[in-house]
Each structure stands twice: as structure tokens, then as C-alpha cells.
Amino acid sequence: MPLTFEVIAEALRERIRSGGLRSGDALPTQAVLMREFGAASLTVQKAMTLLKQEGWAVSHPGKGAFVAHHDSADSTDDLDGPEATEVAAGTTARIETLERALTEAAQQIADLRGRVEALESCNGKRGR
Image (cartoon, rainbow, N blue to C red):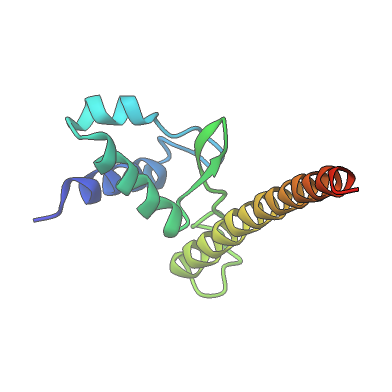
């Protein structure tokens, strides 16, 4: 029997597969999913984490979670069928997520470096 977070994740996957949620659409908020499934906050977060890891969803900080950009599964020029498209789209979504996280981390490092330099500058002036 699947755990509640797995049930939530599968329900959202099915909405995406059926076209109820399309590439770029906002996913339901945590509060909406908590009400819909009678689930705790942590359970919904685990479902969203799973969807992101699988490439079904991406987060935009301050804006929410969105359906990842999947290529059309019924495209006639697919080399290996729908499964290959899902894997490629999932990989692309994961790469985009990692690139955003890396950019954010680099910005945080630059901010911290600036703070350290400012503190060192202030301490150097005091020591004279």
C-alpha cells in the first residue's frame, strides 16, 4: 500500500499525464494539497520533493512549484518513444533546478565574501 506522499505524487503525475496540468502550470499550493488529501505539511512537502527529483516539477523561489517542461510524449520524431521523452525532460528539469541552485549558492557566497571583506576592513581600521 503506497504511503500518502506517494499517493499525492501519483495523483499530480496523473493530472500532468492527462493534460489537466500542463507544462509551466502552477501546481496546487501546499495548503490546497493538505486539504485535498487530508495530509500534513511534511507529507505534502515529501510528495513535492519526489516530483522535483523525478523531473515532474520545478520550484521558482517566491513563486511556487510548477509543472516541468516536458516534451510531447506522442511526438512522431521520438527516437525511443514516450519513455525516452519523459527521461530526457526529467533530466532537463533537474539540470535547470541544479543550475538555479548553483546560481543562488554562488550569489550567497559572493554576499558572504563581501560581508567578510567589510568586517575585515572595519577591524583593520580599528587596529591602527
